[in-house]
Image 1 (cartoon, helix red, strand yellow):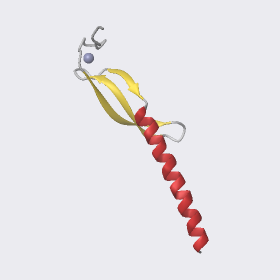
Image 2: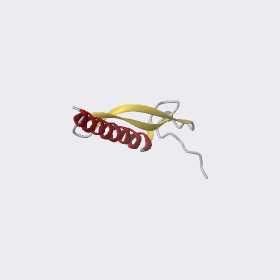
Image 3: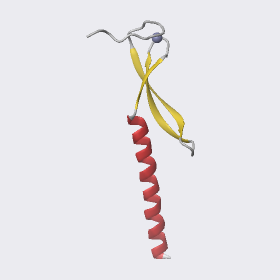
Length: 76
Ligand SMILES: [Zn+2]
């Protein structure tokens, strides 16, 4: 198997950078994991795990708030 090579600088070492980027029409910031050349920073690929985890966090937060709101209503 050949080594992976950066198309910009021909470097052979890579790293993962996590950045917050706006998502969708609400422009909610989500974490995106970029695989990039560790020498010049050229982005080679994107991993989906950060986006999925951020969206799950948002859903969990929304559900928790709805649950808390419904419990507050019962006790008033
Ligand atoms: Zn490079």
